[in-house]
Length: 119
Image (cartoon, rainbow, N blue to C red; front, side, top):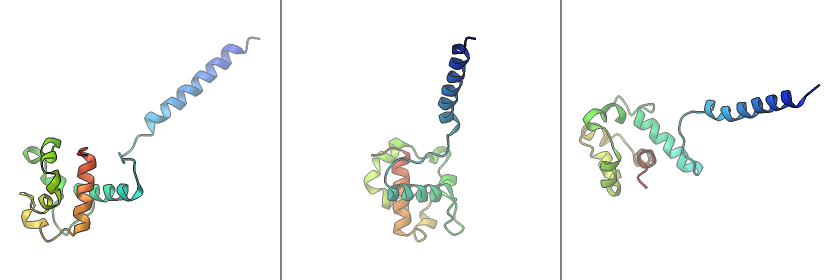
């Protein structure tokens, strides 16, 4: 009885299933790095997307869409002043000025810098 062919087929199936596990293991993007930077990224992402509420204010994502959408080219130009730009955003000027503390601004900056690969 020739056992080599079935053994090769079983081995091939096993290798194929191992290769496919990476495809099915996809999830939310979390950049690699230190735990502090990852935590800031995640908190900034939650602020941006509106999962972390800032009172009754709208999220950044809900306001920055369409013509107001954030893009890498514009953000690279304001990278040095990102903290002040977040607080003086044309869209959020009235509501974010006194609502975000320095830590939240820093978390938003961390998210935006990593999300748009500004550094």
